[in-house]
Length: 275
Image (spheres, rainbow, N blue to C red):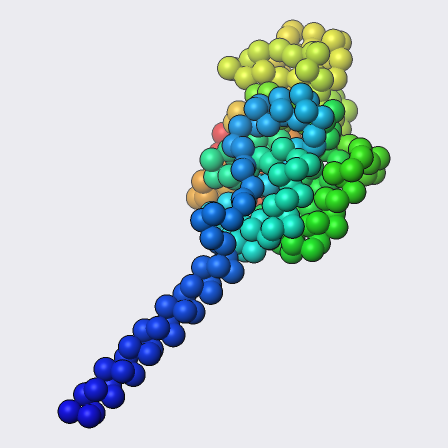
């Protein structure tokens, strides 16, 4: 009988200890339900409208549900009371899920997760942080931006006026005429566009636009821009990257990565038979 009472008491103690540990973990990672939290917006348009109206920078948090460091920042960094206060008071917080908005993520040129971006009230990217950021490191990066508009960092003066519109341009907005005639990768301008095969294509100048309109198929990438090396090798044939273009036989060929581009250059006739 004493043995049963002892075992019962021991089990009860273990349950209490387990619940205590669970409670500590919940407090560490999520905080209490009543604790202040960052009110993330999920609409880019609404966030930037508010930024312009109130003169606040936008804090963009690009994340993914499958990304471990992203979840760590969610649980540890963005629940820190100091971060919550700083962000809520000085920024317009915007959450972008990479799986739900891949085009928007692409327009921000995100290459790793998590990525934290600060957009000025003038809608220009002024800060980009890649990878996990602790509460202290994030505060150190954001604090100067919350007080006054800093100078734009060299190499990061990327327009963020409307990335939602930027993604509508075919082939990433790169100029097909420059690719073929100059073998140069150059961004086109929204001022000079043309419609073809259901896509809107940008050009560097009106002269280039007119050249394209006279013979659009001449400049149109082979296989509608799909990576033929991937197709030939049995992989899913995804869209090629204009930055990895090759001009051969007077046509533009796009590839999904540098390795496939290299294989095509070595044996172009082999892959051209895929056409």
